[in-house]
Image (tube, rainbow over all chains, first blue to last red; front, side, top):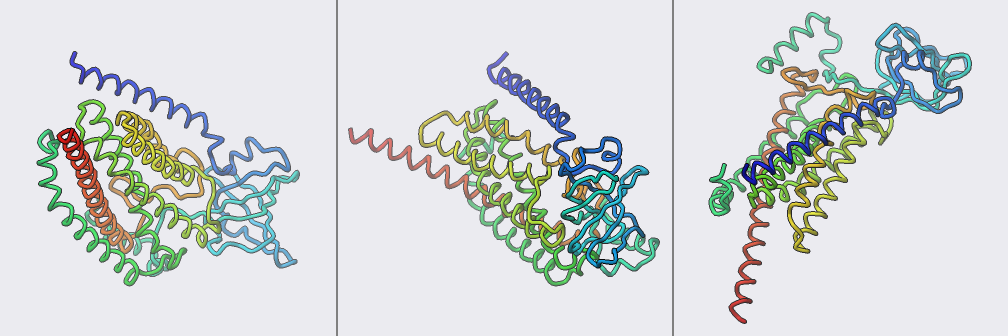
Length: 153
Length: 240
């Protein structure tokens, strides 16, 4: 075996070990490295009451209500599965906070199962759509999207 | 490939390719940014902030691409001992770091109005910050190896080790819940509407050409440094 091939094999082995270690670390970190709990994760495995955590998901359409004091709002956060966590927040809502959109709430889970948020972050999804397309019916938008993405697939 | 590993032939090629790439890259980037700033409609939710996309996404990709180039060049250098590969790796480090920092800064500016925060420690943002630090460490290490006469193999090994961060950045939004959105553009599919996508792809092309031009210019400068040093050494020997 030439020295060149020896080096190649050695580096290939070292890289395989490195990637393996990286994957194991990423797998071990899968809970700790997550930025927030999904509602189903929080329901299945609730954090200690009073522990500072984050809750992320969709703002359930039709659940947003402003309490009589004018600054406190309540809404429900839903996840991928059939789960919802009620949230209470007093303060100024971010501009992008709307029903049916993503949100990350920082706060604590109360004893009654309501999440009390100190801060809200709006989560943007991966879709970028100009305002002109917004009011369109789904059929029209799909047609237009098809026209504008020709050649990509 | 062995043909271009010859520094003489490489210099002959780089002499005219460098200004060509830089000029074409600046032109295309200028067109893409002008297009993105003036004739693209605002996004349905983000409004005018969407225009940061045209700088943020190309610089993010090239920040990661820069380290991929370092890793591949380092591998070629370690296995085949091509001296030009070590020079290519060193040349990619500074533009890679600059693009990574631009990506972090523009992302932060975008995050304030969109998310409501300048910075969060989620998987994507943290791993991208780690990439910027890796670049700084690599540049310091390569310079030290150059000055102290330490083997160029040490920065090359570091370049290979650091490559583990690239798939982590790429997968961070898929593996872990993160505030950063999942990828909009995946193989053959895009969740970005055509009006945004076209100037974006043009900007990616323009920034890539600039990146290539800067790498070639840096390689020429590093080669000139080596030549000058060798000439000085020869002259000192003759004077003895």
